[in-house]
Image (spheres, rainbow, N blue to C red):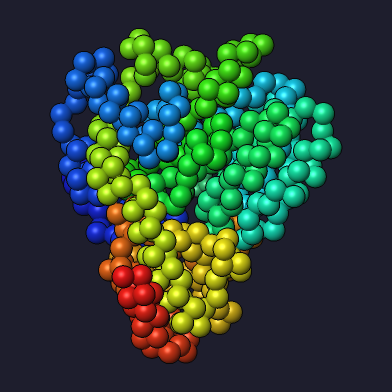
Amino acid sequence: MDSFTNEFNPPPRLLMGAGPSNIHPRVLSAMTTSLLGHMDPDFLQVLDDVQAMLRIAFKTSNEVTWPVSATGTGGMEAALVNVLEPGDTILICENGYFANRLGEIALRCGANVYKVQFEPGTAVTPEQVEAEISKHDSVKAIAMVHAETSTGAVSQILPIANVAHDHGALLIVDAVTSFGGIELRIDDWEVDVCYSGTQKCLACPPGLSPITFSPRAMQVLENRNRPTHSFYFDMTQLRSYFQMRAYHHTAPINQIYALREGLRLVVEEGIENRWARHQVVGKAFQAGIEAMGLGLYVKNPNDRLPNLTSVEVPDSVNASSVRKFLLEERNIEFSSGLGAVAEKVWRVGLMGYNANPSNVFTALSALEDALSNQSFELPVGASLAAARRVFSESN
Ligand SMILES: Cc1ncc(COP(=O)(O)O)c(C=O)c1O
């Protein structure tokens, strides 16, 4: 028999890259329950449960809140194709790779795209956004990435929302890496459109993009001159399925079972407790990295994400060899950098189910080992002691 017909048994990897992260065992088991039809009343109840729990996790009362059947990029596309019409103007706060992708999609919508550039590894700040928006007559939206996964930087949302609303623009936020992991308050921070992904801090597999539109954003959609060119992502059409029970497309049933279970875990833990868990675990890991003598790519401690850390690769060390060692010898996945810093950083995620002390110690000791294997001199054990200090101070 040809080898491609063999049963596939994936190795037991610890997924500590930029995502996906390991899925919770309860999520895995929910995924394997029997299929229902997408119009079955029992499944429609599941859809209602998911919408209710997404509102809790997003901290919103937005009626239009559901999982789009697509990965995070699909959510990004859904946000932009619904808001933008050809000839509209959008401002993109660009501080990394995913903000750049927002600009690419906006261009394909026929929008006039203006970028406010920030140094990679820094946060978006309102002063520059204010200076740029003041140059234009009518800006329909500002778009920003809350947690820039390409660098590990987090940006404050509320100051940018204030700039947008002072100028009559909507605020679109990418929360693919932040949702379910770090503080995110859609209503309090007056976010108009926000999308995420399931494969990071929700501990679910990739494939869905939770999304939410404020009433103000829905009003913009309802007043469009013409419908969006996208049938699949048209939120006014999707509403017919998610809320009015008319067929739109065949929902990915088992993905939605998975999300329901992932959200049940969020609600059981409490969203604020979940944010706190990610904070302490990230802080401990970053303390360990610095104690090892390595640098963090995001220089301002206030701008560092706890759940995704970009670690600077020392000059004498081969970045790929370390990742290969971790994967092949320790079954641990770290991500490389993206773009210009591809071989200059490792991106390490502590997200969702993986955000726990045990994984911090596992990753730090494996990295110490991988670096020693490359003859990099480091104070053996110092990283573990530093992480331990952070955990004991947080108790
Ligand atoms: C901030 C951010 N936005 C968008 C995406 C795209 O999501 P996906 O790869 O699920 O399409 C990612 C993926 O890592 C991301 O980190």
